[in-house]
Length: 111
Length: 111
Image 1: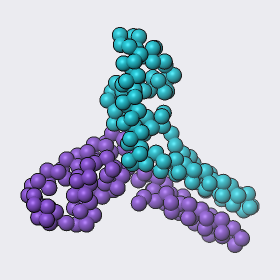
Image 2: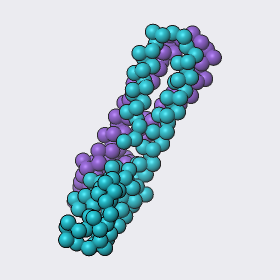
Image 3: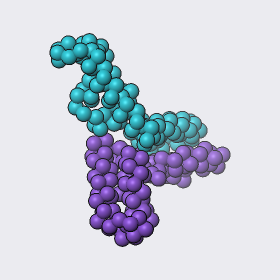
Image 4: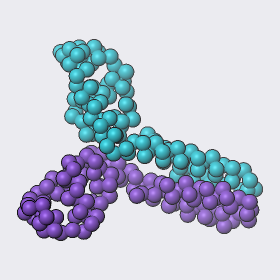
């Protein structure tokens, strides 16, 4: 849910985003979110449920988080194969180029 | 717009998606879309405009197409660096491993 919020959070209302962020990223309880706002925990729950529905629905329709997750996996596989290549080439003048690719691959990781 | 449609098309209504697909992917004119459906070209235009707005708005909020475009670019840079490494290692037993990585990189290209 934290990943879905990172991906699609901007599609929610400000309140939905704020409460879901507090709940999933900051580990607040429903009561802790509700109290300072003068609403009931159930009110918070209704609002976060709606937000969760929108996030899940968006992923079901677009599948973009799944696509990114796959990209991250592929980046990991490339890294592993590249390390095998690097271990078998004795040429140290290639090290900076390998390092550059490892840095490129890091940018493909999620988050 | 074709890329936006590919990414977020499922967030539109069936009609919005259908008309935008005909217009941007199949190169139909507004009149050609309108005629067999017994509606006016302006009616088609209103509907596609609304759909385009939703697609643009979704990208403005999430930036996911931009993120994918960047990944495609990074994959191209990795490919180019890898080819330089391959050209400088004389070891032909590594060729299958290089080939595997090129195939992995292809899966990171858009579309």
